[in-house]
Image (cartoon, rainbow, N blue to C red; front, side):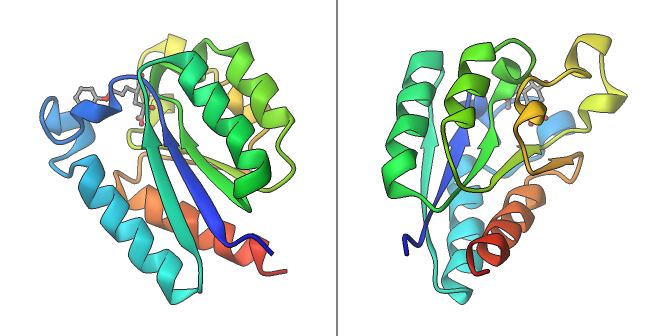
Length: 146
Ligand code: CA2
């Protein structure tokens, strides 16, 4: 069985740790990658972390995941609230999907309260900071070990 977990990040998340630390904290995506790789390795899995500001590139990577990943952790950034296309791509993926938001989107502006991706996600984390990613990876490991 495939033991790779894809960790997909959407728009502006390349800026993590560089701006707005009061909302998103001080850790960078490289820190997220290290934390997730450590959790995955404990369980005998590996990760591939990907970030893009382009919706189509995220969709292409979800298509790639159909053949290369056992599960997906996804923080689509603002595409969460707008992208039927990312939802459609995730609906073509057979494994578990966990949606992860650094901030608590339900405590923020009304336009962040709706997520298209939640219509597909098997679980949703929001407001746990970047620690949410490693928790999501742990959950994917457990779902992919059944
Ligand atoms: O809380 C989250 O993880 C979000 O997915 C982050 C998105 C936002 O549009 C969603 O509503 C909630 C924004 C990501 C922007 O990331 C930045 C990180 C550091 C500095 C600037 C932007």
